Image 1 (cartoon, helix red, strand yellow):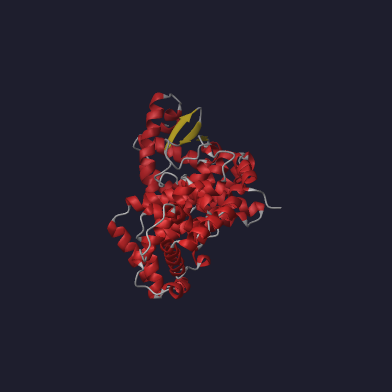
Image 2 (cartoon, one colour):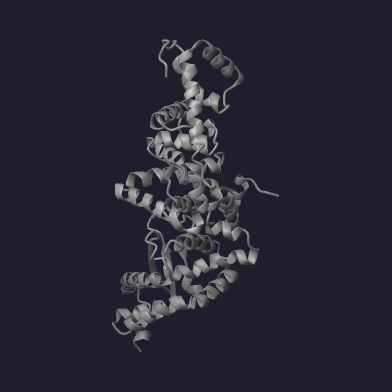
Length: 184
Length: 245
């Protein structure tokens, strides 16, 4: 029988690290996907996921017993992505993009990636999403690509639902402008 | 956007609800209200259509999620048997002997008193597990005691080379250290040690290989030596005399 997040957290708090392993296994994919969509960098996303779980582990005692672990974890991921965005220089972002291009041009592990992103439209969409203001991008990524509900996004970001919806509307408008000449 | 009809007073409110409508997250009442407005407002209808087209474009950027999920240590560990599951953590505990000061995130200080070396982790660093405060590693792992003694020797300017050799040997001989850690954890069931090991193992994976870890560890041991020296200078242990002889 699968234990709930809350039960696993309680066991972890009592020293059973195996329970935290289960929590990690349960949420790591989504944490990675969120970080990847926000950073558009595979290595950064992997680092952020790793760091997010470490941070969650260390601060587990501070998690409100009624709060959802997943929302709390995703908030950590979003904050780490923000930190990275703030701290990374233009050169780092450019070099990250070059690294992705180099990787997708040759290595076996990214064949599917090439297939998915080789179209010009996909590339344009990716760039358009990447150029959104961070607060708007977070909402667009979480709603459209991660399928979080607006209420869940509001909980993760700690903002009112109305603000989340407004950001989503703004995001769609900005994307429309960026993708003006792209055929759907 | 056509702009041909002047927005009605509630257009702003309706447009704020359009994403919720598109993602099917409106209440039935809200849906009726919004759709009623849309029937009579060309501008908002155009906005809705434009949003739909944009969403279709967004779908063009897909990515193969399954390609990008290298397992984190805990997740990998969770699929093993209980005994095997322990191993990476114990490995981590042993690796800690070599790596923990190289991580740059775990503050370390040492105190030698009553014949026992106590390693204290954490200077409030963000990666310091709150539950881990003191690990009496030397009590469990003789190799650590040896290093501690060599450290004292080094202070006296006698065996600095031996200290370095020991550290290098520790790096080469990780298997032995792992087994020592395994034994120690099995014997003591030290919960803090286990929790610490998990964190250390995850962090140590961020490092680039044992060689680099050993080099860093050597550097940090030199700094640690100064700390131990300071402790020893304040605490008469009798250890100096033994080592001198």
